[in-house]
Image (tube, each protein chain N blue to C red):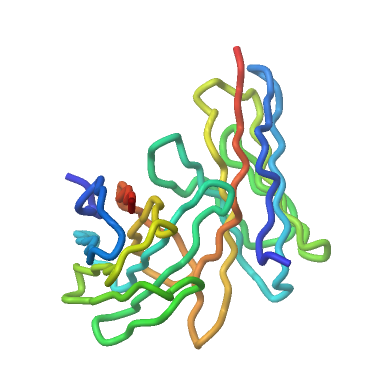
Length: 112
Length: 113
């Protein structure tokens, strides 16, 4: 089993729908991140959390919210999805803020 | 100016050649630098990290860092078709009291037989 698990792996939804992407990890890391990847733009940080009570906005947090339910779980929500949120979303964990990131397998979201 | 810049490629090299991937960054105080490899349809994985000026070698991979020029590169010797992937440069950015990794857009490498 993967150390960082994302669900769903693929999702197609319609504009205006609420979507939740979930991430769970077995690595025991305190730090968790949500990135989105778009062609030509690379990985951009949406939100990050350094422990259960610590949530921080990244470069592109508008239109997104997160919840850190436990050390091992970090979910990303799109309250009202729009087409330009169509992207590949990655959850990641790390032991330190400037060290190695361990990525989940990604969640491909399409908003019609 | 983007914090981390890379040529998008594709960089096409013949099998056995040296592939040279380049990255520039804007934050002069950055102390550590990372190269991630991402195969098509897969998640990124760390392949090299470098903290000091100069070269760091790991097998066929060499990372080169020049802090004065704010430039980091990755050399892949004896390139193989299995090296075909997108290579992402990542640099920590310190803000809000935390360090977090900022990625370049990546360079796509194609190694042809």
